[in-house]
Amino acid sequence: MANIIVQKYGGTSVGSPDRIRNVAGRIKRYHEEGNHVVVVVSAMGHTTDELVDLADKITKNPPKREMDMLLSTGEQVSISLLAMALWDMGVPAKSFTGSQIKMITDGNFSNAKIQGVDRSRIDAALNEGSVVIVAGFQGIDQNENITTLGRGGSDTSAVALAAVLGAKECEIYTDVDGVYTADPRVVPQATKHSQITYEEMLELASLGAGVLHSRSVELGMNYDVVIHVRSSFNNNPGTLVVNEDKIMEKLKVSGVTAKNDQARITIADVPDKPGLAAVLFGDLSSKDILVDVIVQSSPYNGRNTISFTVPKKDLGLALPILESFSNSQGAKKPEINEEISIVSAVGIGMKSHVGVAAQMFKALAEKEINIEMISTSEIKISCVIPRIHAETAVNKIHETFGLSKNS
Image (cartoon, rainbow, N blue to C red):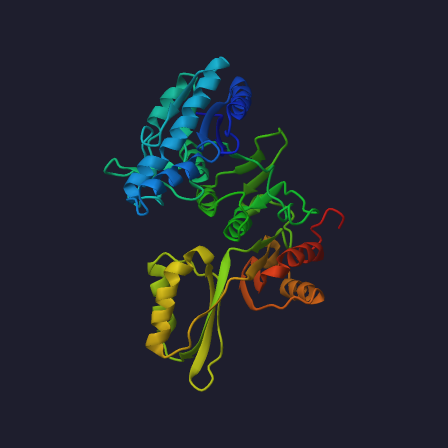
């Protein structure tokens, strides 16, 4: 089937009856142009948060299966209202839950992974001339239990459907009008990209750029789905997320971010023995604690120091593991610093340009900002700095690499 477009609208875009009607008007225009439109919708506004609060009033430890059953109802409200709005405008529409289109996932409640989609009901509705509206963020496992996909789940649902349907584009509508060189709220001189690579977007997403979730970007990259990030509040072109070979001029640095939700943990006097790092980070991994930057000092008198960052929200889970490790190895008590920021420069052009790290370090030095830890990849340089300097650092790095409007 030709001319299939998948669109995703987030909670802000469908946060009120007026906004739902606005979205329906946009969908109607696409439908009247001859496109087969498949729409993925999130729950309205703060519905998911309200449902979580409701569960919290019942129990502090709800079963994950029942939480998924509860949270999936939010999207059911928004898909049905959007279908009603379209019918009211004279556009035939059918809404489906994740289970109705057989969005098959594994059984990992609250963070399920998509395994496949049965497109038969979608194709049947499209062949009838209907707009298809699908509840994002949810699926069904092999035992017909309702599952949810976790953070960024609706983006992931949309990209998965675009891949299965062979859509020419997956439009992600949100409250921003594209991907910027930095957060415009932090860097007023930030500029919008017309195109950016999957690799760059994946790094930026993992570093706190909240435009797209990394799972959806990874899925798009694996299945070569063009993702178009757009605003639901205007008709301006957004940012296309595409393969590297589709971009002619590759910027040395395409984005600068600051991630302020991390804490640095330092354990001193760790015995210099093989396997200890594997034990420590294996135990953290077993609790699904994501470790980011890691630095280990050179051994001195048979001891060394390990420093690393973890999300602040996971400190409660991490502390027993850290204290147990320190006690068992005769190391010093773990030191925790929550007043840090990880500032990063990302760019596919780093593969072919030298001196990027030196430029970044010089920029921070000129502002007398001390670098506490450094991490690099092929297209990223990250520095851990005191959080108080995060905004200054991002603006200076952004300016240094000529990304500002007046550069």
